[in-house]
Amino acid sequence: METTRDRSTEPEAAGEGEKRGSSSWRFAFGTWKQFLWNLLLMSAGSVIFALAVNGILVPQRFVSGGVVGLALIFHYLLPALPVAWLYFLFNLPLYAMGWMFVGRRFFVYSIFGLVIFSLAVDRIRVPVPVHEPILSAILAGIMCGAGAGLILRSWGSSGGTDILSVILLDRFSIRLGSTVLGFNVIVLAAAAVLFSLEGALYTLVYLYVSAAVLDIVVTGLSQRKAVFIISSRWQEILETVLHEIRRGVTIIRGQGGFTGKEEQILYTVITFRELPRLKEKVKQVDPGAFVVVQDTLEVMGRRIGNQPHW
View: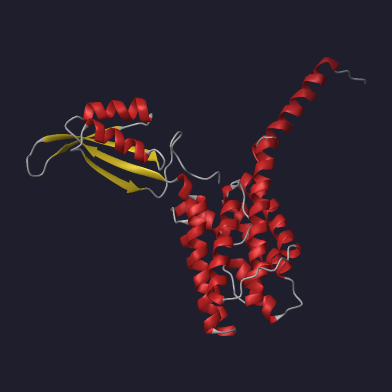
């Protein structure tokens, strides 16, 4: 028996298929502009990191942290094994973990990051004219921290402990640099036993500088400040924050411990760049206002949040 179908629905079905394909692309990669920008961040970070690895760490026989450090240890013990390929192979278990715990977009971009980073370490070999060990450790820390930070500013990572750091940041709000520094203790201890204590101490300097620079690059430039303001002219300050600074404010009822007087406490979260302007405005309204400014670890919110795209 012959059956027929309405061919008028075929173009619609094809159109729906194209829309679904476009939606899948946007979900995984974003727009073309976002895709290229993230590839640029990962490429720039990988190049900077590779320059430090091949130009400073290997000539000085320093060890890095995490998977890079593990790859360097195996390379020093077996020089025929390239650092880049060791790094790529050691990342496979971490990528299995990343598939289960991190977002799909982050995972897909991290595959690109791993390939780009491995190729950069394998191909880029430019000598860095710094020979003093302590200066080499500081410079390597700055370069590796900046490179890793640029990679993590993208929607992916280069693998290694980056994936573990993102998981801990997402689940437990542990700073990226703290996770990396803590994880590196294992690699550092192995380097001290297998090679020399002096080299391990120089590596410790490098790791500390790298962790500090990493935090600055990833979160320092987007740091948020929590501000408490107590003033008798709180209504005017409230209007200033709402309409001039254009930030939300929460009014907290309080009471003076000594006077017993009821007070209105203003609580707001602003960016680091907005802080000087806010203090100036408060001083203009009430020079005697009591103002407390606190650092924040992480802020979630539509307009003021500073969470990465992970």
